[in-house]
Image (tube, rainbow, N blue to C red; front, side, top):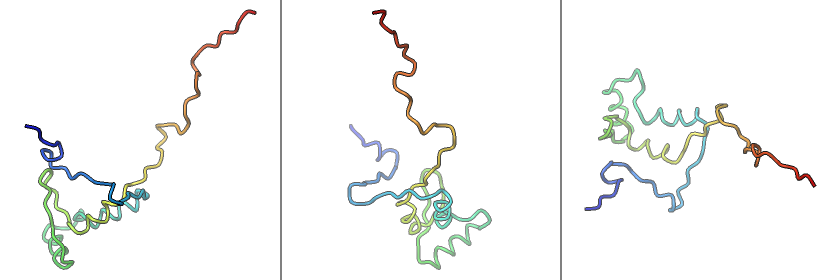
Length: 108
């Protein structure tokens, strides 16, 4: 039988045809938005669950990686993508056409 890859891998597919647009924001702003979703490094699990309860949100457990996150806070970062600047590994210019081709001049 045929099974959709999304179903067997438990991946949420995003439908961008419904008017939802992804917005590119700088990496530091994206990191700030992600901090609201996951527990802080020094925060205990009990403190994170209490913070979720005070905000009337649900704490969810990822079935694939067992990460704990705030369900309501994930709605915000899903609309954003981190804008990554060029790290210097790739050039911004397109290659010159026929750069490596030897031009033969006619004798006549």
